[in-house]
Image 1: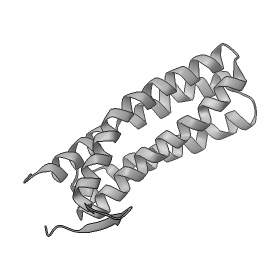
Image 2 (image 1 turned 90 degrees about the vertical axis):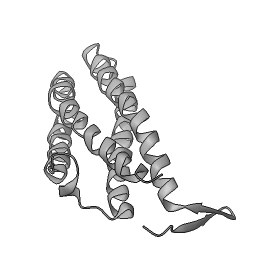
Image 3 (image 1 turned 180 degrees about the vertical axis):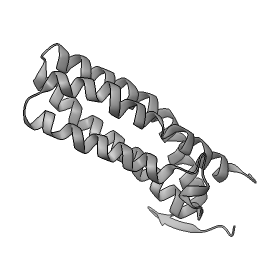
Image 4 (image 1 turned 30 degrees about the vertical axis):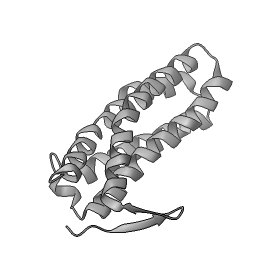
Length: 145
């Protein structure tokens, strides 16, 4: 692959290096999001809803960021989602999206114990399924270095 550079604040950066950096940060960030899911669920169960809702917003941003890094890395590395890890990235990401969407009525209707359950039992396992894709994208990006 021919090196592609972008200008960031007057400095030339190799796009592949930027992808590697983003994936390395994502690998570190996934456990933080996992802990965040548990913390939000705990806050919901202890009826600390104001704190839980504030954290929930940050949690959704974190999940969205991880998914964007995966999507952008695939595009910038020129690989196909179905060729990564078990080949089920599209299905796995759609399942995560559906779980998040399915949990929203609980939030809107104030069903916080059900939301805590869905976070732990539905959303968290589906989010954890993203890790092998991040790991393999990182492996692809760092090959030949």
